[in-house]
Length: 249
Image (tube, rainbow, N blue to C red; front, side, top):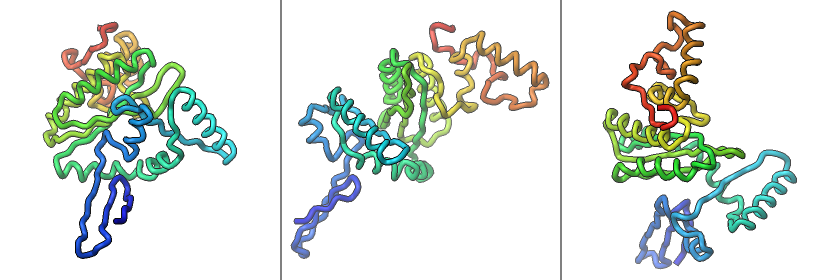
């Protein structure tokens, strides 16, 4: 019997062509080909995380950074998976988004929401947002950090669910934004916000801070010609605004 590895599937072929069988092993979002090894090393399912990273610079510098990352990871109980995993991720990271339209053809919706979080409330934001995302049946939610700083990081939520109704999507989308704001995170990190986020902007910034933006807009654009009714939400009636943070209600 011969075994061939193809992406995340294992293909088996019997040596006798008259008795050929084909078996595919497709790993789901919670699995990895290394799951037995990881469990054996104490990295339990739903209690482990994966850190991907890469450096730019001359070869010696990058090798030194990699060596130091391995050393620090080992000190705190981490295990190096070599550069293979990162290279595999980097190869397809810009190709996956092109599947979005194809998934929509099958009634499957996927979207991304990211927020800025302090280390002190990281666990709370992660827990509360994922709880709301999973409130919809048959929904997959992944979370990762792409930027880290001394005071905090961003949490990047990607959800995939079966949905084809636009209004149902807006309602679901709003519950996630409510959870982000209520748990104390910002409404964005580096993606910025669009018109769908406008009702949450004043609730994120605070009334006084939002008032400064409003005053500047009225001073420089008294006729409201520049981006009227846009992302600032200056045209929104009070009852449509979302105030979920307890400190600025």
